[in-house]
Amino acid sequence: MDVQTTQFVFFGIVTLAACVWTHSLVKAIQMSPRRTDEDNPWAVLPDEAQFTTDDESGKRTLRGDLDTVSRAIARAMLNQSIPGMFSTLFQIAERTPEKVLVRKTGPLFCNQPPGLQFSEVEFNLTPYGPDTVQVSYRIGYGQLKDRMRKIALGVILGAGLPCLVIGGWLMWHYVVTNPNPAVRWQVFQTLQVVHVLWPPFLFLHQFKSGRQHSRTYVSNLLMSAELADGVAPVMQ
Image 1: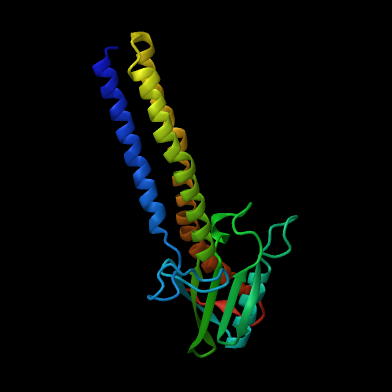
Image 2 (image 1 turned 90 degrees about the horizontal axis):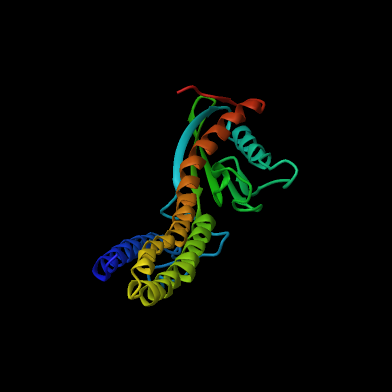
């Protein structure tokens, strides 16, 4: 392979790799910390705190009175566990006939399906008709979002950037400009950079997957409230 062709291949691969790296960096930065106020945009809320703009929400209607439905929801959440590993994943932070607030106390995502990877969920109950309750829920992902963002940035800046800079320099110095044509063919080894470019997207996808599955999970959990005395789902 002649020098000009080798340089063309090298710059093509490096440019593509740099674009992928930049895209992953932008996506990770967009998962910005939760803000407490507009005056301090870098302030992060404590882990046990609040919901954010990334919440999922929904509604379901159940038959029963407020207190019965509230107790059934709390009982269903406390029964969520991973057999043989954790006694429970959630704690009831607040329970009244009108509200149930649940926060995660167990592992965030270790050995758990995506539907269980939320940080907190709030159920608000309102009378909807004769012996009927409408349950509105809001699912928060603050801890999952912060964790995935930190891991992704760690890989992007700690592995991806050094590999692009140092690996690119070594490839240019020892391969691209090598006088031996047979050695210059090794320029295609630059493609090995893909091994440090794809992991950040895995962690970013983990957050997206958690959001997509948890809404279905919580909705189905409300359906399980029909197992409690005096509670039954209203078919919609």
